[in-house]
Picture (cartoon, rainbow, N blue to C red):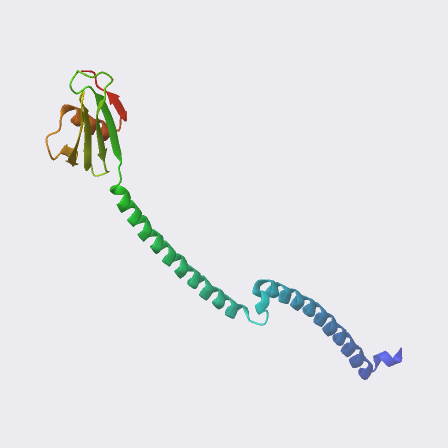
Length: 174
């Protein structure tokens, strides 16, 4: 016991105690470092040797490149959509068919007037007038919902029905 009271023995004992604490702290810190590296490896993937800042910068560059590609695709789609909408404006949007007896000598409402108009209310009215021996076909232009040439009452009714969006086919009683 007298040996523990000597200063050299006390210093040696304290040194062993401090070395043990340092060894324990080293083991704990090594375990924590291993966990941090595992987490960093999960974040960095194959670039495990990079630091987080370099990896974040690479991710930012990749994100910007992807954003530019998406923006370019959106602009192309916008242009194509606008072109499609422009073409659709010229497509037939309003139509109506009116059947009638033009001369009263034929039964069965064999004469017709067909209005075909686009979204700007422009188009044509086709009329087929059936007679006992012949049938005549007339085509009259329509601009802004009105005939550029005088329209018969049946043709006017076809244009009115087409623009009203009501029944697409009607039979007029004469």
